[in-house]
Length: 276
Image 1 (cartoon, helix red, strand yellow):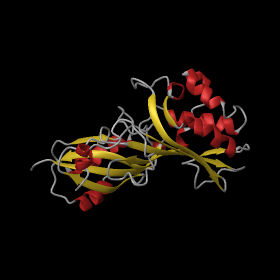
Image 2 (cartoon, helix red, strand yellow):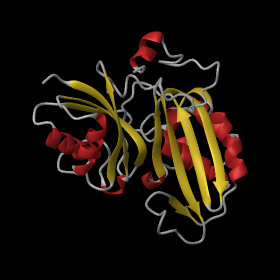
Image 3 (cartoon, helix red, strand yellow):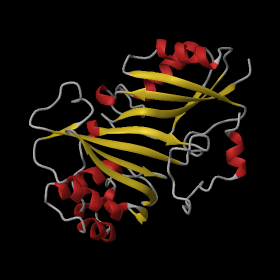
Image 4 (tube, one colour):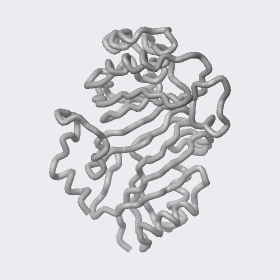
């Protein structure tokens, strides 16, 4: 049977996993997916994710590619994969391509949301997915600080010392801070992200919100290119990968009309892959 090429969308609660990437002797999202695919496909297969998420980080729509031989329809693949996965991981959509699909190299960008529960007591229905903070937080100051992060910058100050990327130059087209009831959300949209970058952005904006830093300090931190100048790395549990953008789901990405960064504007060659 000839191999077929699939794109699958995966949601997961990352609390009990060591992260997306497979690690020897630990439970990972990747190892769980490989097991579920292996149950369906008795021959060799290939699977790749759009990116790594750290231990404890969640995803509402992580994207993976699967290259395997199967006669199942895409709808039946969704059911078969979910049957072989733990309840904290769910594949909710599968698309088929006529040629190999690379979830990393074909991605245009990503959207992350960091969530904070700002109340005297934690909420047991939200505690696995939000950072609980009791202290008073000035959201307007965080909003003012966030605007300094928008655009193409060297985010050296906002990446982990263990980051293996060749450089930290990234294009961020939106950093939005909002509050509804007790929930504060920090939404970040960009073409790519360094290791721990969104969590460091969240930790830095929180230090502005609690008065440890001033909004203008964020611009200075960017220029200093020194991780020690930025804020703490916010806890993993508050972070969720919400979307990975491809040429066929850019309608809600709100990328500025004049934006230019790797793979954007979308070339006709790349765009044609996503017309099915």
